[in-house]
Each structure stands twice: as C-alpha cells, then as structure tokens.
Amino acid sequence: MHQRAVLAGGCFWGMQDLIRKRPGIISTRVGYTGGDIPNATYRNHGTHAEGIEIVFDPTVTSYRHILEFFFQIHDPTTLNRQGNDRGLSYRSGIYYVDEEQKRVAEDTIADVDASGLWDGKVVTEVQPVGEFWEAEPDHQDYLEKRPGGYTCHFVRPDWVLPKRHEVGDVSPAAGAAAE
Image 1 (cartoon, helix red, strand yellow):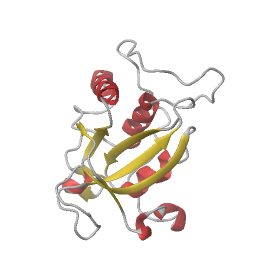
Image 2 (tube, helix red, strand yellow):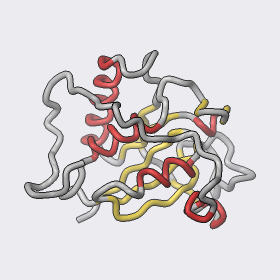
Image 3 (tube, helix red, strand yellow):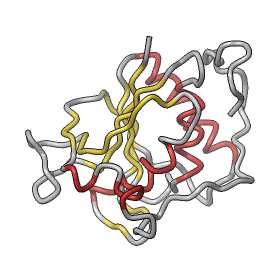
Image 4 (tube, rainbow, N blue to C red):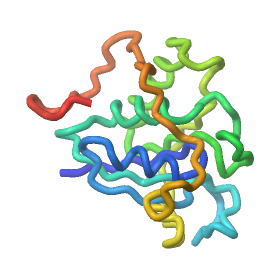
C-alpha cells in the first residue's frame, strides 16, 4: 500500500528533481496547493503555493525520512522565499493527509529548530491537505527536460538532522535500502 505526501518548498521544479530520485518514491507531480482558487494554473494560482505531490512506499521510506530530506534541500526559515524566488507561491509548507502525518511534521520541525542547522526558526506552515491542482505539462519533469534549468534546491551532504528523542515514526522494513 502506498502513501501520499504533499509539500511546498519554493519552486516545484527543483523539489521534484531531487525527491523523485529517493528510495521508495513511486511517483511525483508538481502543482498548486494550500490556496484559495479552484483549477489553479501557473498564470492564475491565487494564494496557492507551488507544491509537489509524492506517492511513496512506506515499507522502503518513512514520511519522517521524506520530511528530513525536504528540510535538507530547501531553507525552511525564509518566509515566502526560496533562493531568488519571492512571494507567497514560494512558501514552505507541509500539507498533512492525517493526524499521524501532522504529528510527525510538528515533531520534525521541532527537531529542525532544536538542531541549529539553519540560522533561524522554521516558518514552514503545517495545514491539512486540500485540493492539489496539477501543473501544466511544461512544468512536470522540468529539470529532466531542461537539465541546465533554474533551481534553488540542492542536497547538503553534511546536513544530518539529529532527533531530540524517539518520535515513534515507523522505520522502513528490515532489509530495505538505507537512506
């Protein structure tokens, strides 16, 4: 059985390009989430954030591991900004599908804040998931189609999030690929 995660962390191109390569990720698609208008598009997405919908196999990776990687590849301490991109569309957000995801999100944020890995407090919004409006085909798999395209996301290889305490997140199944 697969699970769903919906995240926003600045321009959706870079997030999709990095997250799709992780073990246990079944599929990704970019779109608009967390906002106020139906049928959002690139030209008309109101207060929606650029986001990514992730389908993953929880026997290979956990929601916690996805969030740890999410916090590694974008700066969650900048309000409505990521790299050169500025505005509400580029905010950091976690859109949980159930109370367990909400709990894991809040605990992971507390770990990020306690870690000192970023020069500020996390401003990532944590909200229940709403409609996810798929972005136009030109935006799907953008950096695969344009390998030299713009991104403000990158892996920080020395960034490892310590846990304040055990959070009770389910670990991947025994023998699964380590992340």
